Length: 512
Image (cartoon, rainbow, N blue to C red; front, side):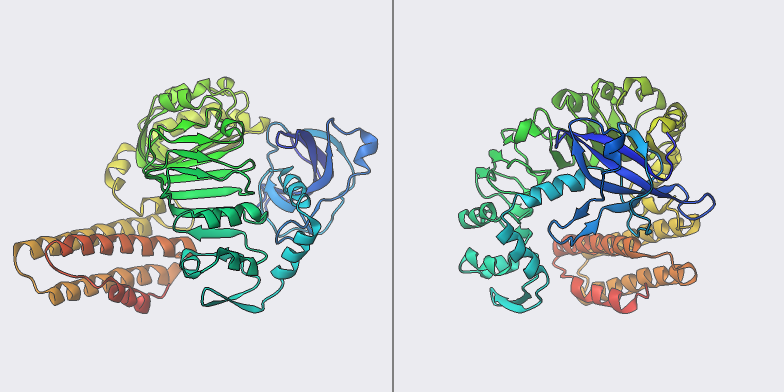
């Protein structure tokens, strides 16, 4: 459907069990930048039934004041394709005419739900939160000076606390990073309705109970030894990284129906979450989709990131009749004919596949492009030929090939530079194992390599300025992985590498 200014759309929000509404307030003119965008305004309205004409004229904009929002309109630019499930109910003059500077997605009802949850917190506590959010008075916590408005605490400060109740000095604390759960930490989290995120390095217990808390996000880097995990109602995102036991039992609201579960490497063999709604898998090398479909038959959202990796039995996802979103990145090993046809996915509203076999990309795009007019958000990009995969399997800069603002020449140059660095460092490692190489000689050679690495990117960036925040981080991460690997390997030959000194050279040399 083609939206016009003033249109009001309604969508049923399962979490609220009500219809919510938004209004189209502007449409970008063809030929202008972002011509495929429209702005939508979320409305302060919900009902068991769709509105009639008289209700349309009584609707008002939604102003949000939950957490750090202060009477802000939920007004943003979104893609101009109206997703499946949205129903046009009428057209009235725009309730807001000012242009928005925000960009978002079609998540109508999300802010209304969050505002509803915020309003359930006692007003006195909400006022304390708002006052603290504006208060930059310095306080002492664990020997550190922090602003009273600080909303995140890290493990180093937690370690220095003699009493966890000292955290009450931070009335708008929302995020905690800790090494492991303690009884006092969990008690504090459960007593504080503002703690939305808890990130742990390790479990260090066999059973972990988060029920009674108001967490929306929980992550655990190492789940070794954990046998039972009880999640609170309202938790939206669970991230488990390493050492997930096949004996681990996870209990969640409605068996995980409302939950997004994120795992790394492969499909975990835990028990529980039988009705899991959303699954994210990162660093996939090999994944058989059939066991995944059998294990989680109620999935509505699947997002997969390869290392790169391969998928098998991709056609089995046709059995997921509730599937709304399917995305892949850097995944191969399948043909276009294996991918289910549009009629097998009656509810699919988002299909994004990036860096996939060229033949599959062509076939899938041709099969689904006609669904765009029906509300499908379709993006099939970076088709890869077999020779590309062979050449880039171990190239950490492979994503630069096809990135909008990066030329093919720069992508190839970065790949060649990585190979050169890797080869040179491997030669140093081999040399150190074969003879008693002086540690200072190794360090000197590494200094030269780091300087050459950095200066090469300086030259590449000088003319076009293509290195932005993401690229800067990627350049750093690749160098860090090279140097940390060299440090480990050279240590076996008794050679100590000063990585801090090498990164000081990187920082002193770089112009980007």
